[in-house]
Image 1 (cartoon, rainbow, N blue to C red):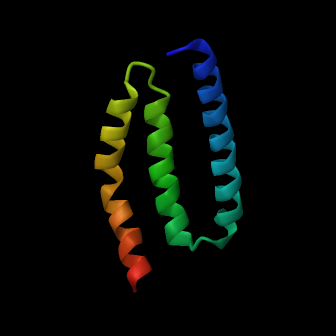
Image 2 (cartoon, rainbow, N blue to C red):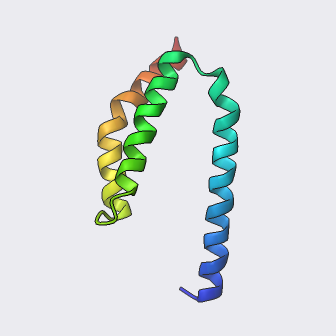
Length: 81
């Protein structure tokens, strides 16, 4: 990848991460306790895997999706009721 394009892409990623943090910070006070607990469980698993420098991003995503799929389904079912 061209270095200039990479620099721009990294900047876009950083900006999107900041937006994500701001959006979640606004939502946290509104979450019910059980939802907050599930969100923390999923997020902490993801972060733990990202901190393992020996894993590729693909491995991290595959492992995380397998582990949190049931949590995602629980939230989807709650939204329908």
